Each structure stands twice: as structure tokens, then as C-alpha cells.
Amino acid sequence: MSDSSTLKESHFSAKLLAWFDQSGRHDLPWQLDITPYRVWVSEIMLQQTQVKTVIPYFERFMQSFPNMQVLASASQDEVLGHWAGLGYYARGRNLHKAAVMIRDEFEGEFPTTFDEILSLPGIGRSTAGAILSISLGQRQAILDGNVKRVLSRYLALEGWPGEKSNEKMLWSVAELLTPDVRFNDYTQAIMDLGATLCTRSKPQCGKCPVAEYCEARQQDRVSEFPFSKPKKIKPIKTAYFLILENQQGQVLLQQRPQKGIWGGLWSFPEYPCLQSCQTEVKRAQTGTGSAQSLVEWEVFRHTFSHYHLDIHPVMFQGVRENSMQLEGEWVNKQQLCQAEVSFGVPAPISKIMTLMEK
Ligand code: SF4
Image 1 (cartoon, rainbow, N blue to C red):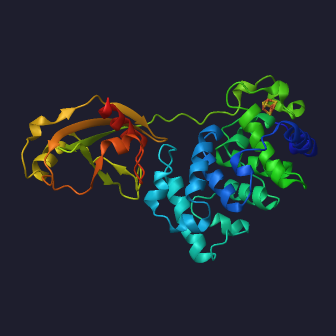
Image 2 (cartoon, helix red, strand yellow; image 1 turned 30 degrees about the vertical axis):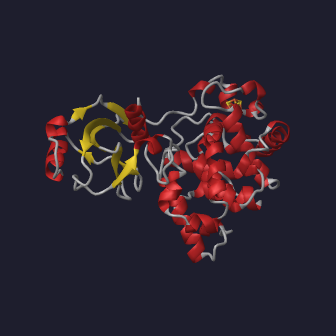
Image 3 (cartoon, rainbow, N blue to C red; image 1 turned 90 degrees about the horizontal axis):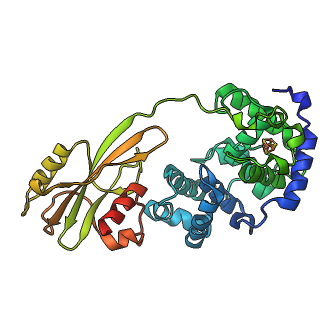
């Protein structure tokens, strides 16, 4: 990696801004009618999610929750209902929590200082910087996943960018490269560069405005950067989902605890093994039927960032109304399949519902 004297800071920002004026994206939904609220929601949705996936979610979200007051007054279930399918549900829960906090502690006005914004749930240093620079034109550096990739290549960083000392160094480079003018455009521009040219696979270096001083390009080693995280084998966990269907074609869903996977979303009752499903059905059922009628479906795998979850759906049909003593809500299958419910359901549950309908 070259030392900071060869970074050519002013060259980097000048070239990037000129490129942004010509080729950057200027008409994304959150770039129109810019407010801290809209930029905040977009930044949270864009964490770990691509722009094209986020756009329809953002537009639906803004229709239902056009401002902070409406969001703070909504229930968590309503908010998570708008998040279903976007993944990383802690983002939706934190968004709602932060809206309530802004209403109660900041008189409903989005805070305007870095430290205040950083104190809100779900907002880290880069997101706080992006909100302030894009919506209020403050000079703040950002270092999201896209920018980490761009800078790792630009510097030919010989190490995983997520490692503490590398991350610290990347932050100081990000600060150094941030120009003294046009902060909001610069923030958009560096995000755009990462999202459109300096992409994870097949970067388009031939069109890149900062190619001249890009170390990875000069060394002809672009595909080597950024270095991957040192591999850790993901553990495999198992869960049995008990699908109880009543004679009206409704299924029983339970709200999951706030902590843990899919916190606050609605899912089938979960058990660690088939035997505990059988025991639960015997214990909970006061009417007809027997646990022998449990039907096991094919197992499928859902992968989280830290582990794989092997999901075993187990079905028990024809439950008589009021015969099950389990807590939860009986929900119409068709409404669930067509996402016509006002609460959040994790993607694997939607997948099971779709299979049921086939
Ligand atoms: S030259 Fe290629 S690798 Fe370097 S910053 Fe530009 S797109 Fe990324």
C-alpha cells in the first residue's frame, strides 16, 4: 500500500465529483425531496441491500409512514410488515425504536449533530455521517461496505478491511479524501462509484474516474481486493416448525420474542425435535386427532450471517376450532401467501406457506 502522501486526495475528489455530475445517479426516490427522515430510512434499508431491491420497499414505506410522527405512532408489527422480505429485521425494529425516541426525546425533530444521531438505535458512524452530509450538507466521511471496497482497491489494502486496524486506517483515509466542498454530492458520488463501477464482481475500471492512481489497478490485481474475511465454518442448527391447520384452513402463528432471530415477527411454533412436536400436540390438543397424523415435509436450509438453520416443517391438519391450547393467532393462509397481513413474517415462513398452497 502506498503512504498517504501518494493518495492524491484532491485529485480523487475532483475526478469523482466530475464523474458524478456526468454519470452519477440523481433520481433515486430518496434523492428527491431530501429530508433527514427520508435519507435516514433509505440509509437503513440500503445497509446490506442493493438499491434495486430497496426502491419498492422505500416507496411503500414512505406511503404508509410519510414522516417521523406517523412512524413513531405506528405499531412495531405494522413497521415489520413493511420490512418482510428485506431481511435483517433488527433494522426495522431499531428504526421504529429510534422514531419513538426522536418523538419523545427530540420533540419530534430529527437531531442535527453527529453525537445525537449516533445515540439512536441502529445508527453507526457511517450512517450518521451519510445522513448529515446528504441531508444537511455537513462535512462528514462515510465508510459503508461499498466505500470499503473502493478504498481497499484504491490503496491495494493487504488485509481484510473489517479487521480493526485496517478499518481504523480506512476511516482516516476516508476523512482525508472528503473534500472541503460539495459534501452531499461527494457522499453520493463515492457510494455510486462502489455501486455502479467498482462493483464486487467485474468492476469497470476502464470507465473509473479515479483509475489513474488506483493501486490495485496499477498492480493489475483488482480481483484480489478487498481481501476476504478469514473463513470460519458456520455451525448448523436445527428447528422443527409445527404447522397446525384448522378445519377453516387457517394456520397458527406465534409472535417470536424480541430477542433472537426474527425478533417480533410471526412464525410457526418452533421445537428442537420431532418428538417435542408430538408431545406438544398431545399435550395441547383437547379434541380429536392424534399425534400420529403429523406429516414431516422435506427439510430445507436457511442461512444467517452466523449459522445455517435446517428447517423441518411438520404438519398437523384438521385441528378442531378451540381444540388447541397453544397461544397465538389463527391466520388465513391465502392472506398470508398474498402478504395481506399487517404484521411481519420471516421469508422461510412465507416459503412454507407458498409450498402449502401448491
Ligand atoms: S480503477 Fe477499478 S478497482 Fe480501482 S477504484 Fe476504479 S473501479 Fe475500483
